Length: 221
Image 1 (cartoon, rainbow, N blue to C red):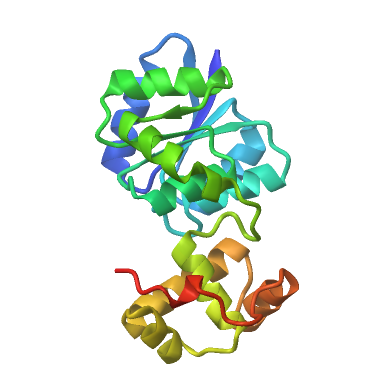
Image 2 (spheres, helix red, strand yellow):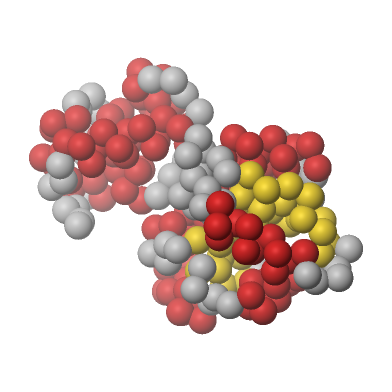
């Protein structure tokens, strides 16, 4: 029997997926969570074989939950199930320790097959995602601090560590001040710190904030 928890902040989708999974004789859904914090609590309580996690959730997203589960030594394997199929989230999921990444457009049979594969220790990625992984894997596998952060979040943290304020970061990255504030908030959540000062200290301890490098100068949409 595959013991499973499910985390998604869309109740209709979560309910439908739970029904699909529970219709399988070899799958038991132990808990359904709507936030990252609740998902981590459920994983800690139940220690499931598989945790099916959305990326975009309040109070800690699926990548943060994956990192926290690994840090806690939980043996559960993570399957990311999300609407996002961009390179940054896929690679961040890999760095965080996810075993699989499936886009929500997949049908019920594909999701069930992915759950079974992850439960048996296999890595599962859609065809398009797998192709991109072959291209980016070398860079994604390079050791770097804070693997739970996306590339853009790394850029924001590095600029924070250099002492730049939000306005300066916005000018550097070619984005709005509101976008920078959102990135900073996400970085604080993923680093599990309460304010910018703590994030800057963590970043500098990890070697960020030194001489300017080419990466943060890139202007990406």
